[in-house]
Length: 318
Ligand SMILES: Cc1cc2nc3c(=O)[nH]c(=O)nc-3n(C[C@H](O)[C@H](O)[C@H](O)COP(=O)(O)OP(=O)(O)OC[C@H]3O[C@@H](n4cnc5c(N)ncnc54)[C@H](O)[C@@H]3O)c2cc1C
Image 1 (cartoon, rainbow, N blue to C red):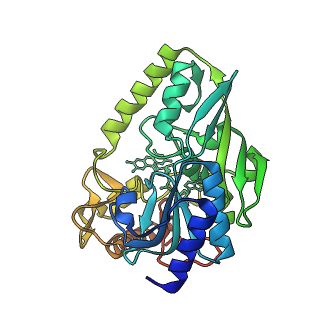
Image 2: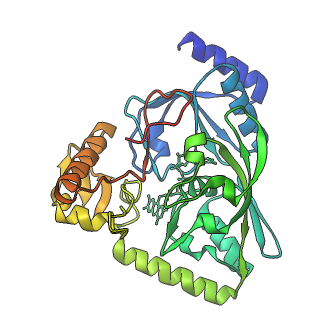
């Protein structure tokens, strides 16, 4: 083991009181099932562990990156030179119409909690995999709704390791984007402002959404990260589904190595068989080229690509 990794490992144990795993295959932490090994890997189950893990990494100038469920990420085949922190800090509580939860809570658990208590608003999360932190980071949404509209306040950890509280405006939420994709603040805790509703109606809406998704989306088990590209806005101001443009450039017939476009949805790149990150990136680049040449539209990735090496700044979106 590299001496800097072994000294980091020792300090990590001293400070956090938990062992750091080394040489961990990232394949198992991404729904794409792609990725080499991370030098360091730690699953945080409390905010204290998470903040202390970040503190040790900062002190050692050891690059670190936070993940939730790994449903919207493509890891590099070369792995990650640094520490991957998997956020498993979960828990939910409600007071009147406000639901507060830790950011490692899975969306499925959150909407179940809301349904049981008759709190409406977040039904659109039905069928979206991942954690609250990942969803806030990308302003996840579906069926015309997005999570940013429901965020009231949040507690964050910045790159200097400082905790602070913010209101919704801090995030500058946009379509599948938020300011923290650039600042790389870590979301620790989020409060959502919801409406009173009936559990029966909420369940009915969730069931309808799940049925809709089943009709439109490829089967759940395929190894992918959901829609690969955001829906572009044309110069006329009209937003078009990326899948529509992709279909018109013959995307559904394309594959590179083990990566293919799903035959039922032109905006889903999936790992058909032992795909490498390079296969996925090459396929995505060919799709972008075709759409650019035919429609003059530059597609933008929705999926985060984490390269082997990052500096202090934002990881590359290829
Ligand atoms: C089959 C399928 C369907 C999908 N459908 C939808 C959909 O309809 N709508 C939609 O919006 N998305 C969809 N997605 C994408 C994905 O579910 C969401 O982006 C989800 O919010 C990812 O959460 P995660 O915890 O898995 O994030 P990860 O994949 O672990 O991380 C994604 C990004 O979020 C950041 N992040 C994670 N946790 C935190 C945190 N605590 N603080 C700060 N940053 C954090 C990571 O650093 C990374 O940049 C789909 C994905 C799949 C596989």
